[in-house]
Each structure stands twice: as structure tokens, then as C-alpha cells.
Image 1 (cartoon, rainbow, N blue to C red):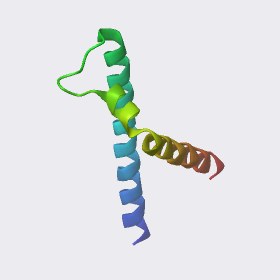
Image 2 (image 1 turned 135 degrees about the vertical axis):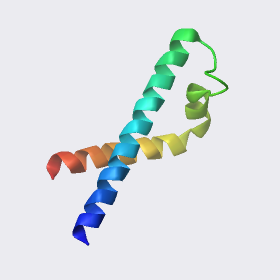
Image 3 (image 1 turned 90 degrees about the vertical axis):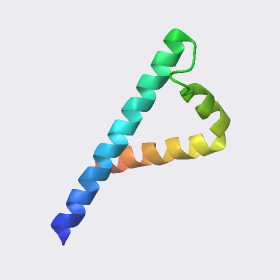
Length: 70
């Protein structure tokens, strides 16, 4: 059972890393071309999220600190 949870945790970590990589790539690309990317506006979405994005960012930072301490 522990092996199952370790696999699930590993999968979730890989998905989060991929999502953060794509988000960073989208932000950098939008800054370079100064236009939406195939209808996707990552910078506008971050600005519209406001405090929600700050909360998600805080959770990611806490998760990174937790991983360093483990």
C-alpha cells in the first residue's frame, strides 16, 4: 500500500513540475512576443487571479521548503 502512495506522490510531483515549467515558458514567451499565445494569456491570468495566485505561490514555496527539510 505504501508503494502505491509513493507512486501517486511521484506522479503528482511530476505533473506539478511540468505545469510550472509550462507556465514559466508561457510567461517568458508572452513577454518576448508581447501577445497572447494561441489564445492563452498567462500574464493576464496571473494578474486577474490576484490574491488567489499569491496563495498558490505560497503553497508552492512551503512545499519546496518541506522537501528541502525532509
